Length: 23
Image 1 (cartoon, rainbow, N blue to C red):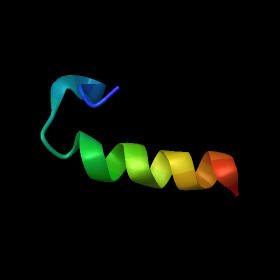
Image 2: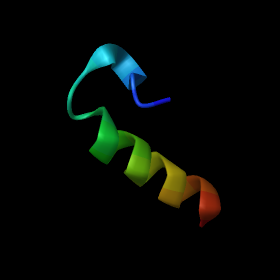
Image 3: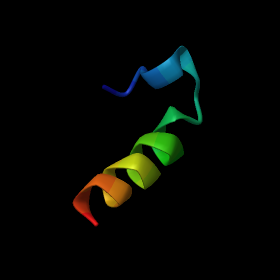
């Protein structure tokens, strides 16, 4: 889950995507 795209910035991307899904 945290290894999204295998990038260190995955945390921010996942957080934004999760917010969009929750919206």
